[in-house]
Length: 431
Ligand SMILES: *Cc1c(COP(=O)(O)O)cnc(C)c1O
Image 1 (tube, protein in one colour):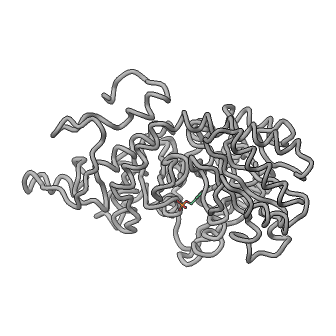
Image 2 (cartoon, rainbow, N blue to C red):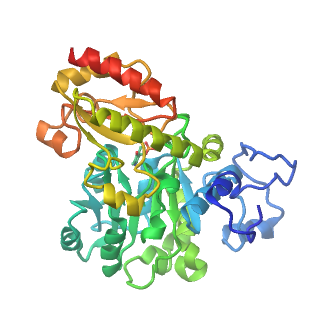
Image 3 (cartoon, rainbow, N blue to C red):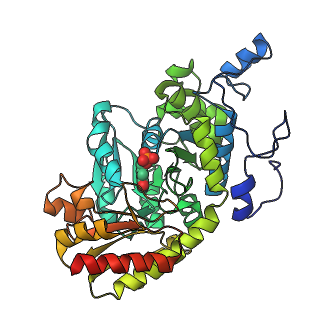
């Protein structure tokens, strides 16, 4: 596909963006460039590459042709100018914050986040001298109050994992804009087919490509997408991007690369020095998955809506938390933020509490009991006895992981088979 071609639709871009027939062989599918290094044409070529005067391949910790195709594909689908792929979603979150933060700085984050992110932000980032301030993102004044002189970013998820919550991205982006701060949105649960955070004011978008983008449960990966719209020089708060970068012989990234400053910094400094690189095999599996993203998401959503409705009407089920149901307090917001649907991840409570949930999970035959989501296969987890085991019942409740709640990631199997499996397991759990 040529870079200045017509603007294609999503279904076309998910197959073609970033890819062209291999110049050496004509290979139509993107080859796996399983190589560590790339031969320089001559000494001048090598110098130009190292000076970032010419874009090309040096060493696969920084750039690799297979990974580069995936980066361009994800950036295109999200409506960004560039992307940096990483070894996992958690790596992408560190990579996203890295150019913005310094010891003593903080990020204001939503309380409604993936459990692993809560741990990463509450404990691990403190080792770098960074801090996260957790706030209810439905309370815009609380976000404003949490922002101080040392705040460098605002972070939330579009569709928050797991509790059927949708963030009002337009409103939160407004608060970030008032404060001159970049909004970072984790768009893992929604994918760009359901929600494009850049169109709602996000400066950066992060992904765990482990989930729906790959879609087949084969590899971990992550991505940071740069909208190219944030002015890194306006406030003086982002010296890594606006001032001479000592880790890159004094280069001023924003002045030199304009809207691509953040992307170039992510590769030339972030990947170079943190080394959280995606390998070309992982990029290959994710490229295969992305080709069918819209087809899968459409089916994921249709199945999830059907199953959530069935569960809501079942007397053995206490309640269902899914923004795709008209009964959800977030249903109206869904129509604005992700009008094609609320994703395929939701929780429901079973009458009979903790014991019934444990029996239910064990009785399921088609659903797999795993700590993952976004697979073609339907998955389930009882958070209170697994991922949230160490929390008190009050903390479990606040995290949307009460003892009587299970979380499902609805796959793309025949929905009637999934309902039959849920039906027999509910019968055995509540007998
Ligand atoms: C899984 C997940 C992550 C972490 O991604 P990994 O690839 O497992 O490191 C972050 N955010 C969300 C919303 C996730 O679902």
